[in-house]
Image 1: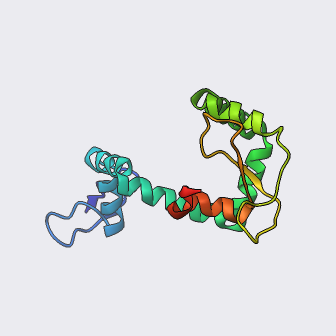
Image 2 (image 1 turned 180 degrees about the vertical axis):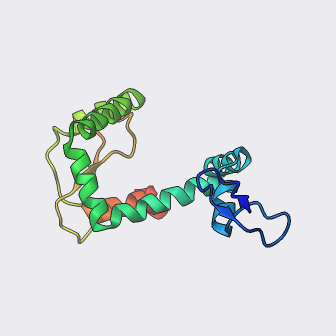
Length: 156
C-alpha cells in the first residue's frame, strides 16, 4: 500500500505498477498543475497577447449574460463602482485636457440636424480636430458611430 503523493488527497492505494505515485489520474493532474513551473507557465500565458485576448473574450461573454448585466449594474451603483468611475474620469481629464476643454465649449453650441444629406435626424457633436474647439460637425447617432468605425467617413 502507498499513500497518494497529492497532499490534499492522502488516500492509501495499491499501485498498478511499481512507479505509480498517485491514486488516480485526477490527483496526478491536480498535483502537477500546482507545481511552480506550471504556475509560472500559466502566468506567462496570461501575460501574452493570446492569453489577454482569451481572458477579455471570456469576460465579455459573461457581461452579455443576464447575470453579468445585473452584476455590472449592482457594481456601478455601489460606492466602489462610483469611486471607480470618478478615478477613470479624473485620469481621462488629466490625459486629454484639450478634449475636455473642447467638449465644454461645444456643449454651448445649439444642436443641429445631421450633416449627411437626407438624414434629417438631430445630430450629436463631433470634433474633427480638438485644437479647434468651435469647429464642430453634427451627425446623428447612426452616422456618428459609422464615422468612428469606418475609415471612409474620416474625409468628412
